[in-house]
Each structure stands twice: as structure tokens, then as C-alpha cells.
Image 1: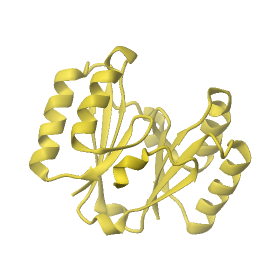
Image 2: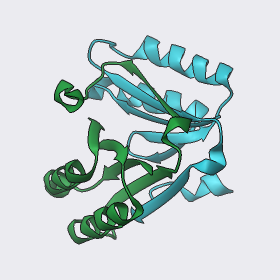
Image 3: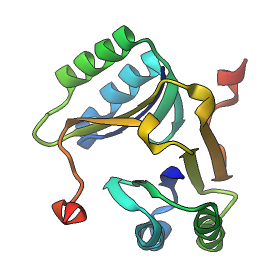
Image 4: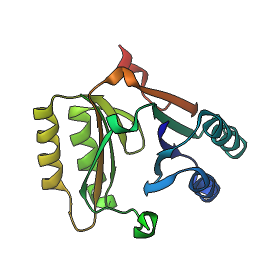
Length: 87
Length: 87
């Protein structure tokens, strides 16, 4: 399924969350990631995130859509995605 | 249509972007907003954002989906949405 993930965690945990999310999804901007994941892989991501996060303080929002072609994305301003993701 | 908007702008422009996005959408977390907007209202939001943004530096990503019920949202950790949005 198509997944958008956005985290908001204390600064001492941003590095770990960034590395984790990059293992599963494409970085888009700031703390925002997107990509295609199976339900199992998404569960894995959530489980690993919970090990990193302070669940009383941090937040991870996951949007999912079974039909990737139904989600459109437009970027106003700079596209901050690294070009090598398209290679 | 259902809209998710995420901005990444220089700190001196975050206040203006926050106020703008709040006029159109519900704040979810950090610089992330969601809500239902008509195509016209979305165009207005984009136009106004462009007036605030430095388009060579800042970024605003807009995800749209015509079917809100096809997008699911889960939050791991803290739900940072203010309760008064549900009143």
C-alpha cells in the first residue's frame, strides 16, 4: 500500500528516526517520507519506531492508501528530494 | 477533496505559513495539516502560500485524494491535535 509517514520526535531521537524511516520509505522533506510498503513491512516499521520513540512525547503519523494512483502530490517551491532516488 | 499539506520553510516564515494553513486546514502535527478543500479553495491556499514563501528555498508539499474514505490515518505515540478541533 501507499504510505506517507511524518514524525515529530525530540531532537535527540531525530537521527535514529530518520535512519529507520529511510530503511522503509523515500525521504521527501524534513520529517516526511513516502513509499509503497506491504502491510507486514508497515507493521515492522511501526514496531521499530516504537522502540525508538518516547510514546508519551513523540508522534508518528502514518497515512495509508491502498491505491497509490489515487494520491496526487504537488510541490510548491523547492523539491527537496535527492535526485538519486530517481536513478 | 481530501488534502494533506506539509511545509518546510525558513524559520522566519513559519509563523505566517502556520497562520495561513490554519485558515484552510486542520493542524495535525508540526508543519502537517489535513482537511477537506474544494479545488478552488486549494488553489487559493497555494496562491497565498506562494506570496509568503521564498520559492527558491521553501517547500510546500500537497497530497490530494478525491476520496477521503480511502485514506487511513494512524498515530503512533502522542496525538498532538488540539482537542478543540473536535468540538
